Image (cartoon, rainbow, N blue to C red):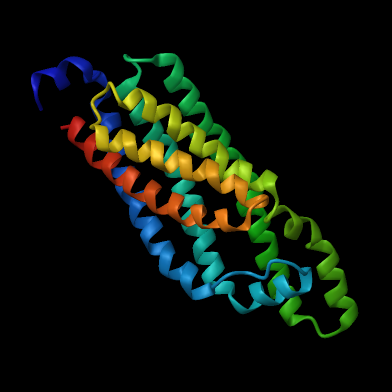
Length: 235
């Protein structure tokens, strides 16, 4: 660790840097584990509650694995962003508090309460739909799952799961330009944030939907660099 790093890094936060660094590496592993599962389950039907329920009934194990991994990685973001905040608060405390609020609080709470709760509802309803023996039972399950089915592809859910965290990463990236993180990490933050913002346009222009996958890939490498750096700061 060089002299400049010793000056700018809060020595009392070294344990937090180590914890945050390890959490970031675990998060990256979780993201990579989720990729083949997403490929395995394939795209869910874009419309039709009954078609979606049949799809979830067919891919129960895969989707429970995805939900588990994504809930864990969401929770890991809390110590990760506290570590980033500790490392950068001396540069711009106000902006880092905003980044912390967007990413570690708003995103995590909303994603767990809305996105993954809706997916869990669809999985459970899908299992029951697959086991139903009458049309009346299937119709009742489809009606019960209609709200969760409508939430998942909505712009509001995308705002919670894509736009808000992208803004949090953007704010952190702005501060990273002058902090202990290298420029590559800051530029990855900008690229990840920009692709997340561009993805929101997919509700008007279908071709922009590809930015969701680019956003996920860039975010993975961003957290990898963040994790390595934070862990080194804790040494």
